[in-house]
Length: 522
Image 1 (cartoon, one colour):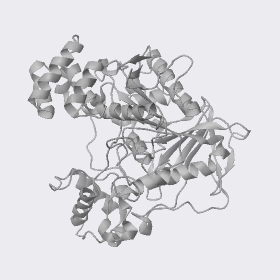
Image 2 (cartoon, rainbow, N blue to C red):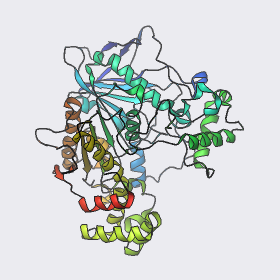
Image 3 (tube, rainbow, N blue to C red):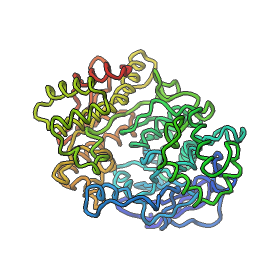
C-alpha cells in the first residue's frame, strides 16, 4: 500500500497521508457550499470533481470565531483548557461541509466498524478536523473514524418560518448537514475499509446533544446502528414559537423583518457573523430563551428525542450514555472562589441555583454520603449530579423498553478519574473523556488537561476499548472489563477510573434524591 493512497469516492478521487499508524483524509467534501442561495437551505450532495483532491493542509471549518472575545491569561488553567480546543490555523468558510477520516488500512475483504464523531462546542463552535479529535490512534485499534464538520450558530439553526415554505427547515439545517454526511458515509465508507452496517454515532457535550437529535430524525433512520451520548443528553428541543421569536429578534438587529430571509442570504458573511456574536452577548428579549439550536419543527424533527419516553425512531438502537463526575469545574475557572468555598459559601451558592430548601437537603445528604469531601467538592458534585439526572432518565427509559421487549438495551457510565493537573483542582472536568476515548491522553495537546501519566493512559485504554467493542458488536463489554446493561432492578453503572469496574447503583441515595427533586422519569 503506498504511503499516500488514493480512494475513489462517489464525488471523485481523494488522496490521503499515512500518519500514526493510520491513513488520514482531511476535510473531504460531502456537500456543496452553503453560501449565497444555499444559506439557511438544506444541504446538497457535493458535485463530482475531476482529477485527484490531495489531502488538505488547510482545515476548513464553519464560521464561529469571535475576534472580540477576551483571551484567557497565559499560563492559567483557563488558557490550558481553551487552548486544547483551539481552531487556530483553520479557514472559516460557508463551504465547510466536510469529513475527516482515519482508517487503519484500505482494500481487502475486511470491513471494520465505523465510529462517526459529532464534535462538541454546543451548536455554535467546533469542527471535525480539530486536532483535539485526532482519530489516528483510535483507528489503529481496528476501526474507521469519521469526524463531521457542519454548519453552526446562526448559519445552522436560525428558524425562519415566516420566510416561506422553502425556509421551513432553516432551524435545523446544521442537523441536516450531519444526516447528509451519514449518507455519504453509507455510500463511501467501504472504500475506506469500513462497514456501513456497523456505524456508531458518538459525541460529547454539544456532540452528545447532536446524537440525541439524530436519533429523532426520520432522515437519519437506518444510517447508524449504535449511539453513544457523552455529557450532553438532549431530551427536548427548542419550541418552534420560541425559536421563531429568536429569529425575528435577530433579524431586527439587522433592520430586517421576519420574512426577509432572501435579503439575509445576501448579507456579507463578516457582517452576519458580527451580528451573531453581538446577539449572543446581548440581553435577549423576554420571550427569547436562548440563541440558536435545533428546533422541534415538525418536519426535520417531528418528535422530541426523549420526552416522556423513548422516541420510536431510536427505541431499537443500543445506547451508551453517561458523563464525568464533576463536569462544572471546567466552566468555573474564571471564578476562583468556587474552588475555595467554606460551608457558608457552599450554602449561598447552591441556594442561588437550587433554592434554599433543596440546597439544605442536598448538602445534608452529600455530607453524609461523602464525609471527607470539602465544600468545593460538594458543590461540584451536587451541580453535576443535578444535570446528570437526564442521562440516567434516558438510560432507565431504554431499560424499561428493553425489559418489555420493545427496544434495545442501554449501558450507563460515569468517569470518576480525577486529573492530577493544577494540583488536582479540576477533579473530573467536562471534556476529560475526550482524550481517553480517542486514546490520546498522553498526547502533547492533551497533557495540560490529563497530565499524560500512566494513570491517564490506563483509563484511556479502558474507555477506548469499550467504545471500540460497542462499535464492533453492539455491546461495550470487553474481555478484561465486563459491563452489564442498565436494568432498573440493578442499575449497573460502569465507573471508569484507574481501576475501572461496573457496580450496581453506585450512587443510589443521591440518584433517588434527584428523582424526587426533579421528577425525572425513572
